[in-house]
Every structure is written in structure tokens, then in C-alpha cells.
Length: 381
Image (cartoon, rainbow, N blue to C red; front, side, top):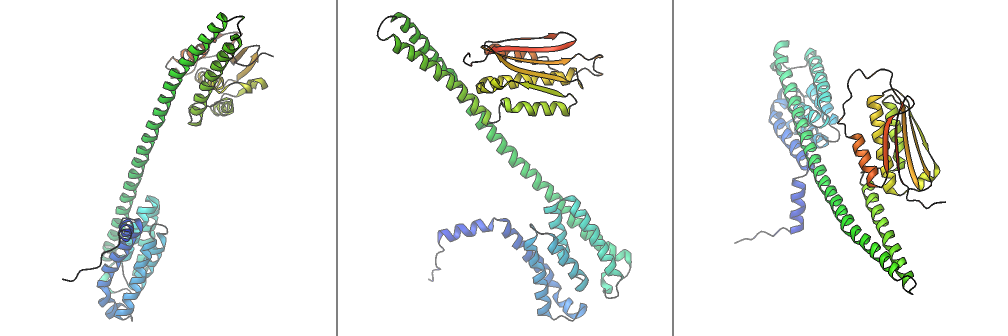
């Protein structure tokens, strides 16, 4: 029994990958178009022109081969199809071309291509070279031309929309997967912060207690240094978690204030930013707190005092960081009640209080003023 030679596994895998690729589908489309057109070769060679069966086959094969470009340049097979329609009275390729334009260029391009196709076809109809069998009257001719173009373009547009829906679904799944990974990272970071931070705090407190007990002893200095090391490690842990979140797009720092001001100005409320130089030395944790406070204040100002200027001042006084956001009170209430959950000030107060600070908000000197004060964490000068 004759045994056929085995195909190498690498070659089989390469062939399988190619068979499922878009290029393979384009080749199949070209072969399908050629298979349908070649059925007309006897008639083309006998009636429509002076081509022989062989030359007509070669011309149709060359025209069908342009469908390999239908993804990158669908207008190439379209122009070739219009030429074949006028020369050989062949309308098969134009169907594939219109479908390709609708599939890979969308609705507008497909509609324009269909209208141009019908106009060119009508011009060909007026020429004396068109055969009688394509329609003795204009109505007969249009009953053939219009359904061909509209149906092919319509199917292409439907396929284009299906491709868009499928691509959006893939993007949605990828975004959901990235979101799940990001949430898991944030949760792990919080767990690390809570567990390790607590142990570092306990270590610092116990080292301070031992330093007090060992006062006057040779090991007092060692215990004090241990307590300082634990506190620095806790601070580094806090700032590392915040920087990681910033890289993932959670909360910007001082560099994001300019964008907030620009966004507020686009909503009609000009913003004056006054940030002292020493504020730039704040830790990422405190910069994130500054950003959130200013963000919430500008949002409230846009809701309740739209169109009025807002002044944002941030500075350091001694061991304290202070933030003040002030806007004039509107002379008349807004035409519509602003959309608000009523939790903005509460969330700001909780954020500032969690860092050992205080927040006040209210009317003062015909203006609405929000002022937050919290430890700066900077060494005193």
C-alpha cells in the first residue's frame, strides 16, 4: 500500500494559521468571483467582444485578483469592476467590490460607491455597444442594475456593523479584564498597607516605649533610631501605595490642578491658581488630598455659582498645609436646581480628617469659602 509522505508539524501549523487569516479569506473571495465570472466566458468570447476564451479567462482572472486588496484598498477592485462592466458587460465583480467597500469602509462610502455605480451603469446603457439581453428598455435595465448594487452594498454595510459590534465586545472584555486586575492590585495594596502599616506602627510605638525605659542606658539611642526607622518605613509605604495608584490613573497630584482649572474655565468659571513654591515638596499622599479637595470645590462652584470666578490658594504655614477655595455668591439662584448627591463636603471632610486636618465651608464676606488645614508633613524651617 502506497503511503503518502507526512507533512511536518511546523508546516501544518503555518498552514492552519494562514487558513484562518484575513488574507486567506480574501483569496477565497477572489477565487469565488473568478469561478462565477468564468461561467460567462463562452458568451463573452462569442458575442460581447473579440476576445477568445483564453484571453477572456485571463482578463477575468486579473480582475478577480484585485479582490486580494479589498481590505486595504477596496476602491481598486471597484474601479476595475466598473471597467469590466463597460468593456465585457460583466457585473459579477462589481457585487464583490460594493460588498467590500461596505464591509471595510462603512455606510457612507458604500452609499457613494453604489450611486456612482448606478450613474456609470446608466451611462453605459446609453452607449450603443451594450447588448440587448441586458435590457431593451431603461426600466428593464434598472431592474437589473439597482438590485445588484443595493443588495451587495447593504450586505457589506451589515457586515461592517457586525464587525464593529464584535470589536466593541472584544474591547469591553479586555477593559473588564484590565479593570479586574487593577481592582485586585488596589485591594492587595490596601491589604499590604493595612497589615504591614499596622505592624510598623506597633514597632515604632514599642521602640519608643523601650527607649523611654532605657533612658540613660547605652541602648537608648538604638531604640530611638529603631523607632525613627519604623516611622520612615511607614511613610515610605504610604507614599509608595499612592504613587502606584497615580501611575494607574487613580489620583493626580499638583500637576493635575492646571487641568482642573482649564476644565472649569471651559464650563464658564475662570479659575485663579495661587500655589506657593514650598507646596511642591509635599508627599504624593498629601498632593492627592489637595487635588481631590480642589476638584470637589470646583465642581461645587460650577454647580452653584456657574460663570463666577473662583480663586484657589494653596500654601504652607509652619507645620500646616492650607487650602482655600473662594467664589462670589451668585446674586440669583440657578434656573434649575443643580444635580447633586449632597455628599461632596462630607467626602472632603472625611479625607481631610483622615490625615489629621480640619475643613470648614460657608459664606463669608459675600463669598462662599472652603478652607482645609492639615499637617504638611514637611520639616519646620
